[in-house]
Image 1 (cartoon, protein in one colour):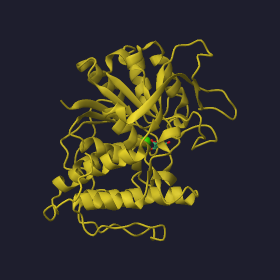
Image 2 (cartoon, rainbow, N blue to C red):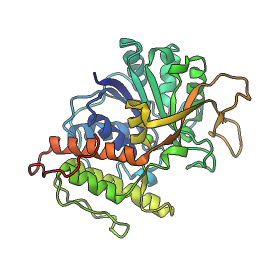
Image 3 (tube, rainbow, N blue to C red):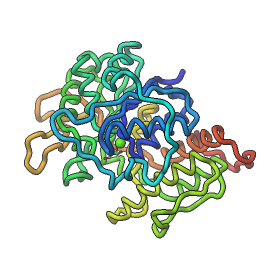
Length: 356
Ligand code: RIB
Ligand code: CA
């Protein structure tokens, strides 16, 4: 039986891959997508998801608009990281569908009440709309089957300030409300937290894109490079591969410009893969709290691994994974999905099928 999952995203280049990964996963049924302000404004996040869904020939999955701003502070976006519209260099077709009549927070509450204990929540953006949903439905932690959060940094530098991570940085009050709300949750309902400690080991490189294009039967199989001009666009025959290549190349350029290498940290599709299969990750329980008043450390996530605060654990933090195993699965799933949605030439005999 496919696992029902609500996505709460700030699409975003890596959020885009998380969506494609779940669309391509036979063990996933996307119950709804909450568009959260973060990488780009919420309205643009919603447009990006509607556009990817139509491009992918996906069923009419509900996209609900989230709050325009974080709980207590003005919105900060990061077009320099994800591109002017949040999808890198990709120029996605304008979607014909509109956002849902209900808000993202209302969709969270309605979906979690519909089938208690069955819905998986995946958050790959700021936690603003999950926090609003928790205010409306305090029972949400017990009504969810599982919650996976991409966010935070523990024994690892931040990517937005020296100590904090983007999704928490945008709305730290929301993040604290969420972790506090799960403090009383039973052990099997603790959020699985995919923080930078691990997601910055998920390094997508041009070869991964080339393998995905090959798996999709897309031609030509392109190898993007740092010397490619910004105005270059993919000529891949498969539209999902073409637009994905244009999106990810911007993210490669961004990481390259910060001397991180010609690569992209694929935070969100990794969190999506863990949401469907927690066995991909090894975790350790901890009590997590969020600094709100530090002059230098505001929005830093702090993990008490040893019970020094005398408070029970409220999170299971991912501490180890196998990036290659994840990329094999991502390439196989999205590659096969792209091929099936946009069949080109008949599939060449595959020498060794990658694990699905
Ligand atoms: O810090 C990385 C996270 O912030 C990712 O989810 C990225 O998409 C941005 O939202
Ligand atoms: Ca994101």
